[in-house]
Length: 227
Image (cartoon, rainbow, N blue to C red; front, top):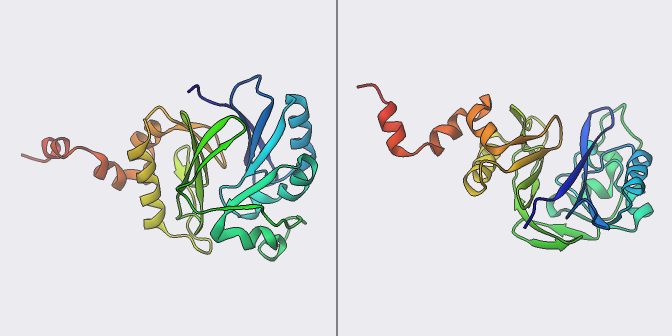
């Protein structure tokens, strides 16, 4: 299956990446992933692309990834898929928003996901992966040749773990799982900053030195040992 057509829109004061994803450049239906802010701008982009949003997928429910969910769900009629553990954060958004941000509208998601599901939406086959560590219920959405990774893995960095529910060993295991199960040329579409690939992060990300050691073949580790 061909790689999807992914359009990135950096929105809001935290510079979060929202994505419009469709099976091909001329596909009539699409997914909207992590609409964090600027709903009017995202709606204009959807209209300019000439697509019908079939579903809104959320990687995790930190405010910068869900701030525009409610208005865009209303405008498009799309149903919302959210991490099961974090559904209450979307249901009562402003309870969790730091001072100085918002206001955002709450929304009751139609669907919850725990990881392990396979979705067929907008002509796309999507594997739902449970990738906690940055947040307790964090999900990554895998498509052919692409990972919509939210705040798990960034270009040269990783998701922070100092927010409620964050945990470094858990995040490290989540990233290692992605590196073990997907090809190095898989494109990573992160929640912040620019695009990257799994191979680039495996080989150069300064936060993944321990993971690199575990991924290296035993023979390679042995040959590198002092003699």
